[in-house]
Length: 308
Image 1 (cartoon, rainbow, N blue to C red):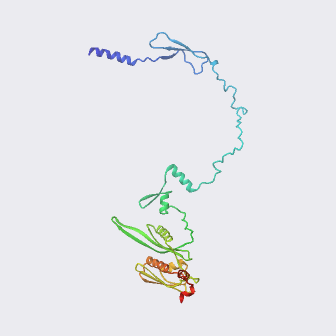
Image 2: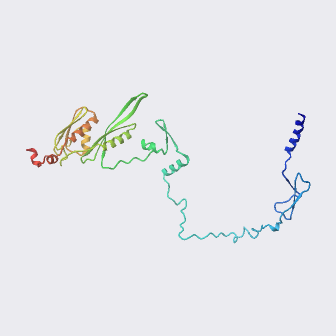
Image 3: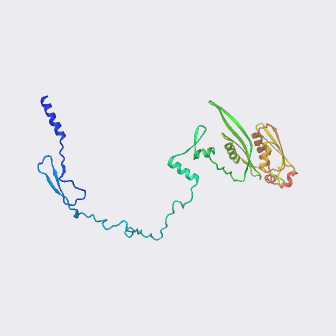
């Protein structure tokens, strides 16, 4: 134990001494030396210092700015290089076209993310430029959606509020019935449901365009013959009329005939008063009609012999 305690001070003393050389200056000197200065380098294990010579100031080239006068205009003239042939200078920042609000909003979203509009729809936060919400609900879009220009006109027959009972309660929806037609013998009936009236009407219009049928008419814009059609509990009776009679019908039957372009006809709803079933029953009755020329062509006889 005595020997161990005796060796500890010696180890601690050895750890405190370093073997790195130390630099001592004989005189305080400046960064730029006017005269050659001697530097004495002492080593802790050597008793004789080592002398090192420094280069003279005349050997260092420091005359780069000796003849430069910043106040002289001749010394500060800037001569830029000539532009190459065909060089077109770029337009300045203010000369370009003005950005639209949508482009500014898109650039803002790329930099800082979507901006919250302060409104929540069905429990979800609505962002200013949320494209999904604008497509599905039309929320936040001030520009009205242009109608499809395909030659068909739309007429809303009925909009009803319907509910669906589920485990958590009742779900509220709107059902719209729309009739489309070009008033030249083409007509269709469609139905659609959605959580908003506008969306329901759009869906039903698309569905009606998928169910277009042709209505046979004479030159007096009436039916060629009588017809009856039924759909569910609804039954519709259609009769031709003389010129100047007009469309004498009510409810959905009148709307379907007007959108088809019929100007003289008689219609009667028999049975159910449901608007959707009566509209579809009218379409069924119209599909049963045939032109006299088509019947004569199928039979292979002239039209004059049809009434013999």
